[in-house]
Amino acid sequence: MPLVKQGRIATDVFVHVADGTELPGDGAVLISSARFLEDPEGLSCRAGKTGVIWPNNRDLDDLVPYLDRLAAVALVFPTFRDGRAYSQARLLHERHGYEGELRATGQVLRDQFVFMLRAGFDTFEVRKDSDAEAFAATTKRYSVFYQPTGDGRVTALHRRMQQRHSESAGQ
Image 1 (cartoon, rainbow, N blue to C red):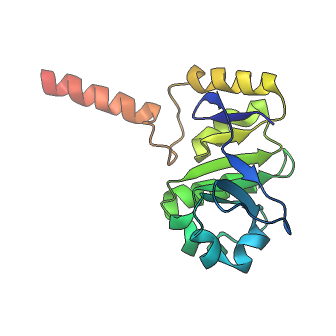
Image 2 (image 1 turned 60 degrees about the horizontal axis):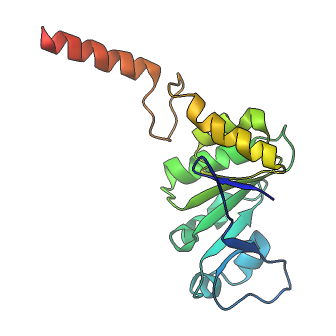
């Protein structure tokens, strides 16, 4: 499955490890939320990076105490009509200050890429190489947005206000 990370097609360093399968001693792994919650302390202390696949119907409060120990959180879009992972992404970034990799997985569609970026996702598992290429191009297409989010971009309104302030200060 192609991976787009920070606007570029990338190699996935995380290995998806199924429940019941032995974890490698080192290396980056992505494991299910159920497996992670069985032994969060032990898994957080392993030699390699640990990431968790967090379903959109599971409460984030169960994950919050361990965020500083996780290298990645993969939020699941089970269908394109289910946007709960958008809310989870914004909560992780804006309320809980999560700074690790935030990955969109599942039904990650081209027409939703920009919205996913704005919600705070920086990594995307896509189904086709053509989607990966389209997404890499899309990240550069839009530079100004009207809606404020936690992605750090200045909104169109704030740009206008800054420009007017600079012009009035220069006179």
